[in-house]
Length: 241
Image (cartoon, rainbow, N blue to C red):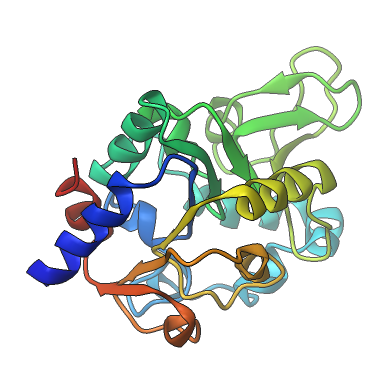
């Protein structure tokens, strides 16, 4: 491990167009459970429908009460950024990191100070009225106390600005993410098993020779990486300058 950390630092020292691509493992160290692991959200209790069904656009439209009952289990308003979030924000402030691309919806990168963040799947911090377009933070969803959140201005339903199953990713976000990856001189992929598509396929746009994978488990992309580190993302990035 010591040799791999030294190699990572060497790669960081000679890079100034770093891009970070992250998944659920970035946030688990902030005590936000992922979906699919043995202690993830999907395993914590029995639901009447599969989670993928309850997080679909069709289910939102036809079973709105049940949708919000499940959606609220994904909200962790007291979560704080961890060492990985903080280090990435530091590198951006120093001009070394150009963008964070995240599959997470928790807003912790921005809370840590990151400015250029491409949220592939949206954010729980943004919610909008489907009738008048007014925006709200997650407090309005939490305050609904098991019911549907309604707009304070027009009483329209307030929908989370997250990408549900059956909905397309935002083209502007995707295009910006692809551009950032193409222009990167170093791509760090962390905390993701790279099995959720189309998001995971974005790393194929990187054609440099400094692809770093940091994850607790092996991924199908390990053989393509220039450096693979198995371990805690926060501990690895936190050990860097």
